[in-house]
Length: 382
View (cartoon, rainbow, N blue to C red):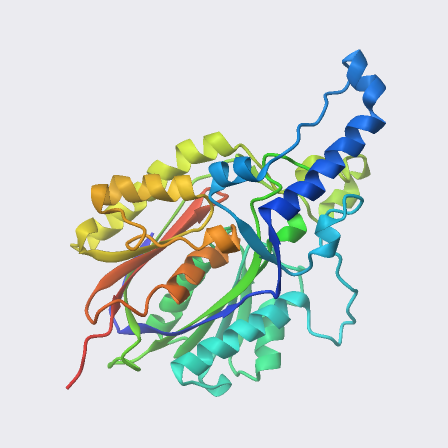
């Protein structure tokens, strides 16, 4: 599915919330290895008998080579680093208090509106698009809309790591149809809440963050830093290779509660092999549709899941021109923030784009799903 802009839709503001706490690879490995040692000591007899496999320790070097990640921001670090707990430890909140996702999303949304030179009155649609919704209902988007004091309507959507680009496409469609004149797409991600910190192959993958993007309909650029949306394109393909089976129906099968699949699980090598060509094809076809070539793109703001995957995608599209400046990376310090990743890259690495130059936001992940948004920096006006 693709949408080519028929009326002018602009990205005029973005926002980013970064949690104050962070964890380095060394700290994460110390905690994980302590858990491994305790496990192996507790099950030493079974391990010696061969009825239980010994767990293998991790290392900072392994993490960096496998992912390119060096550290990650988290909503709470003490619980994650506690070998007896190994998950964020958050205080219970009353229904009258803002939810965790609402609080994070509001901070990002307020920055996006300030950057766009807008207020809550200019927002008539709020879309919360993220992988890790805190609850089924009431919608987090409606909570953010209420706290923000915005009119109009709001809804939540989840397309895993592609949620932000799918949300942008939905926002563009709402603007082009006249259903809205200003849309906030908010992606608050507490990825550490569904990460299995006891799994060597994935305990390092995720971090927490929130982003927001304000898109509006306007004949002229809202301001010189605005980006015209040239088109969006989406694709999905079912796969079990990235999965999380946690949900309300788990209580209907109590014998599986606490199973490994109730947290994030993936077949990493299969994902790498299958997602790379899917993304390259998506971007190539999208550019063909817009009568553009890869060399017409000044920058690729890709989903920040794995540095090796992004390098391969970039090389297949750009060849030797796939430089770090052309394809910026933020996952070394943020890790994989699911849907927020490509927007963080855009937020932090777009100010040096010259007027008239183009770029692409592209996200991809579980589903499989992938979405691309081609944009062009506002031209200078007299």
